Each structure stands twice: as C-alpha cells, then as structure tokens.
Image 1 (tube, one colour):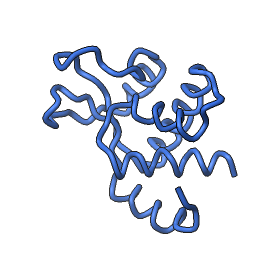
Image 2 (cartoon, rainbow, N blue to C red):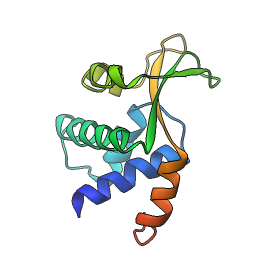
Image 3 (cartoon, rainbow, N blue to C red):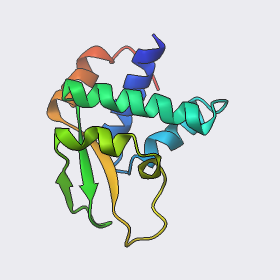
Length: 119
C-alpha cells in the first residue's frame, strides 16, 4: 500500500503542478517529514522510474521558466534521475532543470486506479 501511496502522490503532483523534480521532494517533506533527504530521494527516484516505465509521466528538460522544454528520451532517464543535483531547486533563473508532467494515460490511471485514495 505504501508504494501505491507514493505513486499516487507523485502522479497527483505531476497532474496538478508544473514544478521541477524538486517539487516532489518538497511534497515528501509534507507527507513524510521524518525521512532523511537520502530516503526522500530514494522514494522519489524509484517512484519516478516506475511511472516513467508505465508511461504515466514524461520527463522534461526545461530551458526557461516560462514553460519551454524538450521531452527527455527514455535513454536519458537513468542519467538524469540518478543525479541528485537535479532533485534540488535551481539556484537561479538561468539554470535549466527537469520537471515531470502527467501524460493522458497517467491522468486516466489516476482517475481510475486512485480515485478511492484521498490526499
């Protein structure tokens, strides 16, 4: 059940917000405040990989703060997700970052599989 809750939380975040990867770590600060950063990163990393594999989220390389991005290729996922610096908030507006966005399949999965769970 805990894995389902993590999937739910990240998918909800990908649907409702358009923040960088750090946004999910922030979410874990609220839902799992007792976890260390390493533990939060581990949950975020595993959950992101699972949702990407299912095709429920896309990983985007954001080139600016106004919404311009490129969709990251599957061959790049591991390199990006395993680099902890990409899970930190950028230091300035000139620094690119990675974000996640739910796909239509992810939104459908959220509606059908997780409708019984509450935030």
